Length: 221
Image (cartoon, rainbow, N blue to C red; front, side):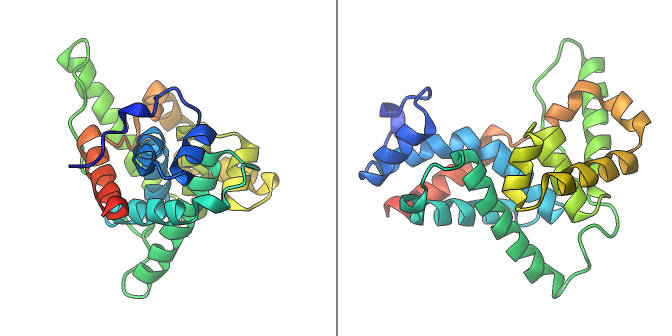
């Protein structure tokens, strides 16, 4: 059984948790993973273009982050530092995949739908799921650079500066890629999707638990 990280408060800031982890409280790393899992999932999937290998890449990114946690100097937020690591791991996997497979943006890559929490009415739930699936299929048609910027800016809500920092590109490049992405997705799609954009590429609890358990087992054992 994995150590109970209950001692690490959910309200405790990342920097405080990092200090505890570096001091030997490995179980606190679970709190960091659960706090940032959805952003990391969405970012990795944006690079890879589908769900294949996403959880494996996430685990590798977390292991790498843990192994280099003593190098985190706090100049950027932990979430930004962690996102950069995930992006690097995802691009490494993408390069490996491209040696034997077609580029991931060639064709349509639809993510298998996972059950969504019940809404006020079955009709509303069905409509929301339909829009979410439509958005995901549309985003998957974008090029990797434009798709990654769109997910970080429009889905994750990062600022232009944070996105530029994560991708190590200029803010002007971020703006250009986002503009191209929005043009490709078309204004009518944005109008139909509405608030459902925030629900795209959700990382549901069972998958979150699986990634966390696998990483913690490797760290503790």
